[in-house]
Image (cartoon, rainbow, N blue to C red):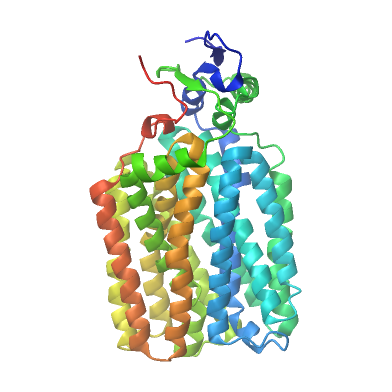
Length: 493
């Protein structure tokens, strides 16, 4: 195989849109052994989930302080509304920034979305009324939603195929490192012995802004995705990036395996028309669209309904003081982080179809059982926390695999927008309805009503597991181009 990454095919025209390239760059990226480059890339980009975990945890952990805030005077219904507004921002942000990510590039967008997040979460700390708080939460969600599309695309396109499942699940699992950080921060800052009062919850949101600035500095060295560059008529830059990566291997004496795949022949393009986007998503790949939508909707309802109202269950049914909520979030976060970390390799070894369907179904069954025990008043607060730890050990791996599924089963040209569309549909259906519904159910102070909500979440997870088991794609160990042929690929013959 020639070391020449790209070579223009002979054509009678010089128009950029008519140029055809033959490239082995995707194969060169997939064959690379895991090294420090991949670790640093994953750390710099994957830490986004930490921010989301921080934001979601803070929203729950400071709910008691928000209700007693002299400026906000929030009710349980307002807490649920704030969660729904955050999700609404994430949905619209994902759609808008997802479209821009495919059009303008991964790198530009993961700086723009992070900048929006930092500004919005900092402003949240200065909220002066309920409506200002809701506005800033909406903008914070928009930044995080945009991050999901840009970051998922970039990581997928740099990660060698044989590590893609484990890496993606583990990165999504870092959401719970952020959750633990938010919980610990709330323990300190909401405690009247340290800060407490109205200042305490404001400083909690300041944590996210500070972390965001640090992450922005960490991303300065991350290059644009070569896979995105080669279809946007920038072959020289794509080649330079891959050659620089390979150079680090040679300088350290690390052997690079030979290329075994045939090179791709691609049409250059500067954008993908929206008509082609939707034809690909909902006509050509409609079965994959059904799977992605079902997985993301189920996990969004399951997670957002329960986690956004986690603190309310503890305070209203178990009489846990609001300043102690963080102590119960920490073990919950531990179970969620360990799930993807310990189960992730099985998604590459046993396979996507079996592992995704089984983790979804098992999560649903366990939630139904624990919901019944909650409804009967059998569980005390410690036992309830342990039950949630076990449930979400599996549910965390399941939810992470939903993002993996959408990111790897649609073509390169529309990958970010595909993530955005299904994240938006799934989160819009499950993430906005869930917190609002559960906020109202908890407000009734009736355990049976809350149990009904748990049963809805359990049923959605079991149905999603069945859909994945029947129609899911076995993408383990395959290149992204093999799983989903690029729209710009030249047909053989």
